[in-house]
Length: 207
Figure 1 (cartoon, rainbow, N blue to C red):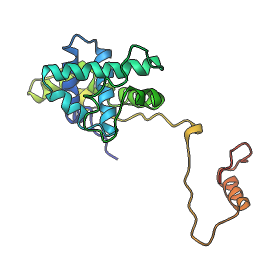
Figure 2: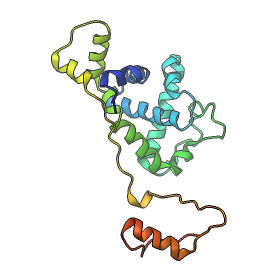
Figure 3: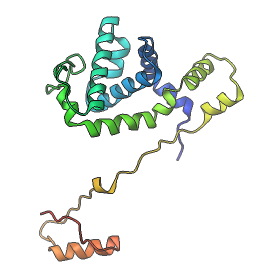
């Protein structure tokens, strides 16, 4: 199996890198900027239309509003509880284009999933696309400039996504049976005892 190299990943996520730089120009620290862009990347994967491209192409005023809304969402995730002073409908621009109305309460209700998803972005592609040294090296290389050997080697390094294994309490398995051959509970138990080579005592039963 061939892995993409770091340089390819930076080219693929060039837009995210440009938005990251634009957020930093709004006097945000690196860690603040990467959290905002990682949030937008996750929202885009959740069906929020073209969040990253919208941020890249937005006017200065619209970009500022998107940034403030993103920071409001991140603040909600950090707090874990709604602040009395927060307007729960204060993300109208972010939610534009979503079929169902979305407010800050959506993020309160899905805090754990949101945090895990944003962290997955930061620990995955974020390790590369938010690395200023690698971004500059890729830009210089694409412009035909000669790089230091260590940076050139870093761009040629295969990118391997480190996926955190799902905790066993959150794993599930879907088993289907042919129509007319529905086995009884004992047959199912015996199958999994043999498959897992362990007792199923303590596992919850569901119909």
